[in-house]
Length: 97
Image (cartoon, rainbow, N blue to C red; front, side):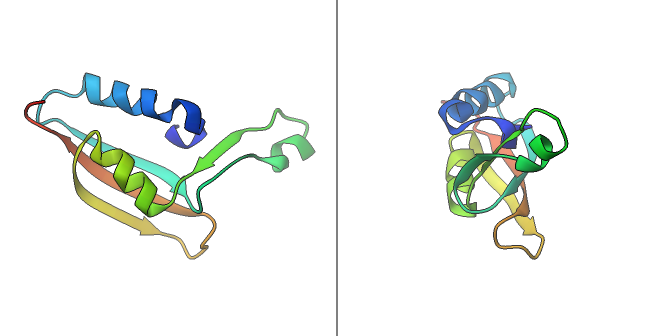
Protein backbone atom coordinates (compact mmCIF):
# COMPACT_ATOMS: atom_id res chain seq x y z
CA UNK A 1 0.00 0.00 0.00
CA UNK A 2 3.00 2.33 0.32
CA UNK A 3 2.84 2.98 -3.42
CA UNK A 4 -0.59 4.60 -2.90
CA UNK A 5 0.70 7.09 -0.32
CA UNK A 6 1.42 10.54 -1.76
CA UNK A 7 4.92 11.95 -1.60
CA UNK A 8 3.67 14.54 0.88
CA UNK A 9 2.88 11.77 3.41
CA UNK A 10 5.41 9.00 2.70
CA UNK A 11 7.89 10.22 5.33
CA UNK A 12 5.18 9.96 8.00
CA UNK A 13 4.24 6.47 6.84
CA UNK A 14 7.85 5.28 6.95
CA UNK A 15 8.27 6.91 10.38
CA UNK A 16 5.35 4.77 11.56
CA UNK A 17 6.99 1.64 10.11
CA UNK A 18 10.12 2.59 12.03
CA UNK A 19 8.16 3.25 15.22
CA UNK A 20 6.41 -0.12 15.32
CA UNK A 21 9.53 -2.17 14.56
CA UNK A 22 11.47 -3.34 17.58
CA UNK A 23 15.21 -2.58 17.51
CA UNK A 24 16.75 -5.15 15.16
CA UNK A 25 13.28 -5.93 13.74
CA UNK A 26 12.84 -6.64 10.05
CA UNK A 27 10.35 -5.20 7.56
CA UNK A 28 9.87 -6.74 4.12
CA UNK A 29 8.43 -4.13 1.76
CA UNK A 30 7.26 -4.52 -1.81
CA UNK A 31 5.99 -1.74 -4.05
CA UNK A 32 5.66 -0.90 -7.72
CA UNK A 33 8.34 1.58 -8.73
CA UNK A 34 9.59 3.46 -11.73
CA UNK A 35 10.52 7.02 -12.52
CA UNK A 36 9.78 9.45 -9.69
CA UNK A 37 6.19 10.09 -10.76
CA UNK A 38 2.99 10.61 -8.82
CA UNK A 39 -0.24 10.28 -10.77
CA UNK A 40 -3.76 8.89 -10.75
CA UNK A 41 -4.69 5.80 -12.71
CA UNK A 42 -6.95 6.75 -15.61
CA UNK A 43 -7.86 3.07 -16.11
CA UNK A 44 -9.98 3.31 -12.98
CA UNK A 45 -11.81 6.40 -14.28
CA UNK A 46 -12.48 4.74 -17.64
CA UNK A 47 -14.04 1.82 -15.76
CA UNK A 48 -16.28 4.07 -13.66
CA UNK A 49 -14.27 3.82 -10.44
CA UNK A 50 -12.50 6.55 -8.44
CA UNK A 51 -8.92 7.06 -9.60
CA UNK A 52 -6.17 5.41 -7.54
CA UNK A 53 -3.03 7.34 -6.73
CA UNK A 54 0.28 5.74 -7.67
CA UNK A 55 3.49 7.23 -6.29
CA UNK A 56 6.29 5.45 -8.09
CA UNK A 57 9.79 6.02 -6.82
CA UNK A 58 13.11 5.31 -8.48
CA UNK A 59 15.39 2.65 -7.04
CA UNK A 60 17.76 5.32 -5.78
CA UNK A 61 15.05 7.35 -4.10
CA UNK A 62 13.34 4.32 -2.54
CA UNK A 63 16.63 2.93 -1.18
CA UNK A 64 17.45 6.33 0.30
CA UNK A 65 14.05 6.55 1.97
CA UNK A 66 14.36 3.02 3.34
CA UNK A 67 17.80 3.82 4.74
CA UNK A 68 16.01 6.21 7.11
CA UNK A 69 14.15 3.17 8.52
CA UNK A 70 17.32 1.12 8.98
CA UNK A 71 19.84 -1.05 7.20
CA UNK A 72 18.70 -2.17 3.74
CA UNK A 73 19.75 -5.82 3.81
CA UNK A 74 18.22 -6.83 0.48
CA UNK A 75 16.91 -4.87 -2.48
CA UNK A 76 15.66 -6.48 -5.68
CA UNK A 77 13.69 -5.35 -8.69
CA UNK A 78 12.00 -7.29 -11.42
CA UNK A 79 9.85 -6.64 -14.42
CA UNK A 80 10.96 -5.55 -17.86
CA UNK A 81 9.21 -2.19 -18.08
CA UNK A 82 11.44 0.82 -17.26
CA UNK A 83 8.38 2.87 -16.25
CA UNK A 84 6.69 0.28 -14.01
CA UNK A 85 8.54 -2.48 -12.15
CA UNK A 86 8.46 -4.21 -8.79
CA UNK A 87 10.78 -3.23 -5.96
CA UNK A 88 11.27 -5.52 -2.97
CA UNK A 89 13.40 -4.75 0.07
CA UNK A 90 14.27 -6.13 3.48
CA UNK A 91 15.10 -3.44 6.05
CA UNK A 92 16.38 -4.02 9.58
CA UNK A 93 15.74 -1.33 12.19
CA UNK A 94 18.86 -0.08 13.91
CA UNK A 95 19.53 -1.40 17.41
CA UNK A 96 19.66 2.11 18.80
CA UNK A 97 19.01 5.72 17.82
